Image 1 (cartoon, helix red, strand yellow):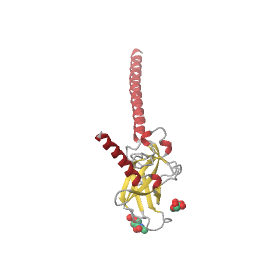
Image 2 (spheres, protein in one colour):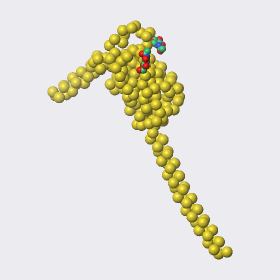
Image 3 (spheres, protein in one colour):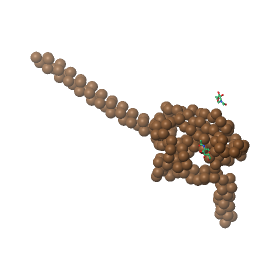
Length: 203
Ligand SMILES: *[C@@H]1O[C@H](CO)[C@@H](O)[C@H](O)[C@H]1NC(C)=O
Ligand SMILES: *[C@@H]1O[C@H](CO)[C@@H](O)[C@H](O)[C@H]1NC(C)=O
């Protein structure tokens, strides 16, 4: 009894905490301008290619709006097309539960302008369509603002990353086929030579 009361109050408290701190994407102002270097639709390769991200404060907002911003975290996020039927990439308004942005690109102290970072796409990033998002945090490490390299519907300026696993599997298959082919042709060549040798002996 005491246990379940404790459980209920814990659940209630954590729900309250989530709403009190307003850690939902819909409650955040989009005050940051973010760009990512791949052109729309470009295919870049995990483990090889680099992405350059820039971000700055959108000066259309009143100056001082960013006075509480302490740090910036830049993340790589799944576009809706790569979230379909994949609960583990689902967008949830509550940012504590959101799974849209799973790859950290960089975290830095906040600066309103002249921010750029070049990231080599990590080897564990899977094949999918992506965009880049930046979150601003205050000194209590709460979300206070964001910006993203795509529009609100997440349909523009998307790019594709080709994951390493898909690539290495096809390379492996290709090399297995190739070695099988070489063994067969080597034997073929060997037998042909033998037959030729026999034939010339019999002459
Ligand atoms: C800056 O923010 C304003 C207000 O939200 C928006 O209308 C404008 O398009 C933004 N600027 C850029 C360059 O996106
Ligand atoms: C922007 O950053 C670069 C590299 O850190 C620096 O050389 C340049 O002077 C900076 N520009 C401004 C306007 O702060």
